[in-house]
Amino acid sequence: MIVLTMHDNGMIARVRGIGKRASERLQLFAGAGQIMREEVLPKVFMSGGGDHRWQRPVLRNGPAMLDTMRLASSIAYEATPSRLSVFTSVPYAGVHNRKAGSYYTHRPTSKKYIAVPNPATLTPAEFRGARPRDFSDAFFLEKGPQGCGIYRRHEKQLELLFWLKKNVKIPARPFLYWTADALHRIGLSWKTYILTGRFWGGATSAPITAGVPDVGNKGGRP
Picture 1 (spheres, one colour):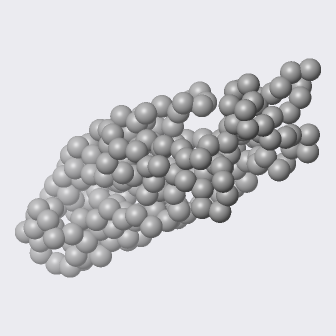
Picture 2: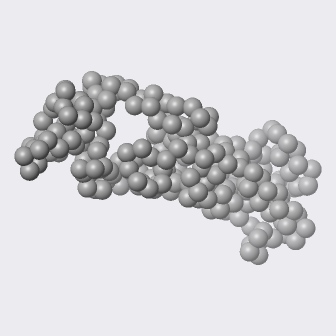
Picture 3: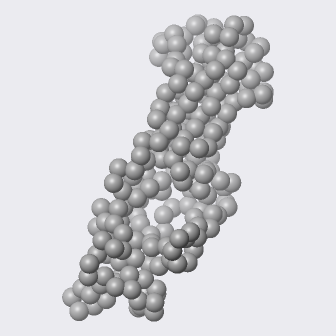
């Protein structure tokens, strides 16, 4: 699990200064959590990184981090009178949510190689969920025409299904952080609530907790 918190910092001091009662502080943090989960973080995913532009996928077309929507759909928050926690329990979230510009080197733990699917020869469903063992006509070539990998014969030619790598470098794609947009929206929301007793849209309260920290892998790759 990775967690983003508002705790013992300038934001907390501000809340204690304007929220006279614990119930007020609780609602301020709940409102901030709602903004992060429903407005800010979806924008980070859809825009490709928000304040930190993500490296686009190398092996396939389309945006990063949205192939199965598992991570983007697995954001939850929990508010108390003293802090707000925004979090996800997706196992690989920490691999992506690292310092911008850094890389994580992934190495196999129980096998010799990591199988990297080839989008040029696999269908979208196969790319997301298939494994080398799923292809009965496939075979291993250490020195194949496109390098070490899993191949099959197709129309008298060798077709690469999976590259086999001893390690893979995954670029950082930070998503769980306080964006400039988030802090601006939260500040306006708090001001509105303190002055009127209502959040944007007219609601007088926000859920104390919301979201599912891991919606699960629905038959595809992460």
